[in-house]
Amino acid sequence: MSALAQLETRLSYCDYSCTSCGQICPSGAITKLSLNDKQKTIIGTARIDKKRCLPWTEDQECIVCEEMCPVPQKAIRLEERIVVHSSYEIITLLQPTVVPDLCIGCGICEYKCPLDGESAIRI
Image (cartoon, one colour):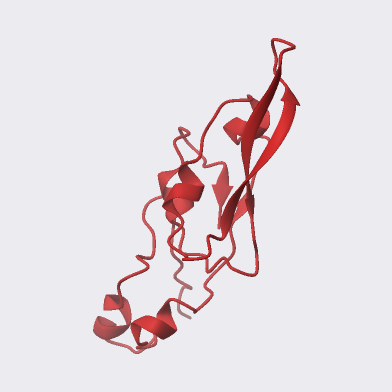
């Protein structure tokens, strides 16, 4: 019985502009794809843990996941929201949301999330 391998996106990610895995996989378990096909192949979907995400829980600016998203149409979008800051001041804040139909699950958002330990966005 063989173990199922999976990409641990907190440790690394699937580079949007690379097809090396499919080219060098000795068993054929990873399909050889053209770059165009690879960039459209869904390997997962990101989900934001709003209990850990800085803009959602601590009213702090953070746009790392949106900036890092390599999908041209951006699978992570920033939505402007008016929130009551913990100091009771009303502020405008950009909060990330995932567009599931655009996310390919590359994991760079999880890899680059600035939180220590578990990321606030996971594939």
